[in-house]
Image (cartoon, rainbow, N blue to C red; front, side):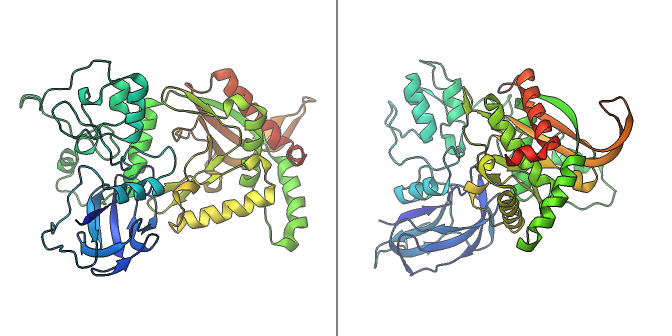
Length: 440
């Protein structure tokens, strides 16, 4: 019997993607690890590998098809000589992935990935003998809480039970009755699960009837950015801490280092020092090196620092792992590599997933200060402005001119309290104003 190949979840936030290009054709024999297709996710264009061997019997989704939902059947694979004539000609979202497809999604999605990832093929049955579809995380939480999945109504794709359903369920809770009455219309939820927070597209278009305009179609990345940051501002209790940092010592030290590093082709930026300063500060204030995990906090040991990179149509936050242990020149080279591949759409999910802390630097655009939105599950993000010449009062009371950089630390109050956040920002300031200490 033919096996369905399903649209995989190739990134933690992927709910749908574009099947950009088939790398196989009907009748081809493939083995595990062979490339099947190029798929545009919400973050990048990635290659999709086979996890089983067999003959490609039918391609169900044409090249260039957009908005293909995760777990939709995109092709059929089977044995040599198998009859594929009875197979469907158009793909539809699958109620439950086959074992090969589930394996593919599990391998593609990093640990801690999204609920969109395919669930394991073995599913318990409810009292009426019907299959119960639930994500692996939801099953584990249900088991820990002693909940009966058959008594929980799923809110995920095709009624799949997801993490939120299990966390909100009470022991013995009855399964919700069938569809609500016509008097209670449902609000349509946009991609990412966020509820609408403003007028609908139709209402907005009506406002501008008779005016010249262009509609811009949202790509997968922009949809994800909109959904995640809306969720972040609605659900994360942000508070903000601000400090001015004098850069004159750092700029002088940077100039000296760059002269010495010039033969090696290395040129350090101020941002390289900011990354290092934040990484060391997370080690000096370890309680702030933490993320929010729903019903608990996770405190990280290494300093894995994410840095926002603007790309066409959105942004990436590649993660520089173990930043506290790396030299400034190593951080500089890694940041240039990650930023370049982010702009080319060639980052793998493990390169932009994780971290506990992020940096957003708009100083190069002349922005002096701003407030950044926390990228969940991070505990904080540092907004970095431009260095500007300003009058300052020295320790001796004399008025002088210094290069001052404004910084704002956006903090998740669930993870970091005010005093702890203040300690973290103070440590960042001390590192940047005494740059030689960062080399000790």
